[in-house]
Image (cartoon, rainbow, N blue to C red):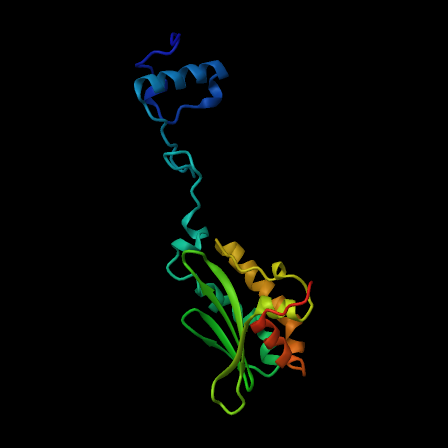
Length: 203
């Protein structure tokens, strides 16, 4: 039943044997022989497969394995959120987790949270004009819905790798562009109140 594949053949000894040179039946017999002998399938050098056959994400792609994924916000954030400076905000100011823009009665913070569930989040704070601190606090996605601009899904946060993280920064910048005129108008009080009380309109 296992005839046709010699135990001492080069096919079993060579971990980089070319599967393309074997027929399907020959590969089946080879695998059965390996199982009978307790021989594990070898990993071809350069393969993205782990010994258990699961695909392993390269280190540079996985933000959970990077020393400081916040560096992407420090690098790309100032250009993406430059419209805040044009709107009268001071900044960006680099923080431990991202960047902050400040205006007399408004504060915008774009930051990375993780590493267990890595995500990009944007928080907005309504500041007291007398300098006593924060009056109200809300996330960008909540304000986006409160303004009637769309659903929460338009402002996603999860960022499992650098490519997605860069996309999230762009999405947050685009959403903030749409929300900002509402925050600089007379509706700002009611918008923050809606978010705090979760009185959001149906998108």
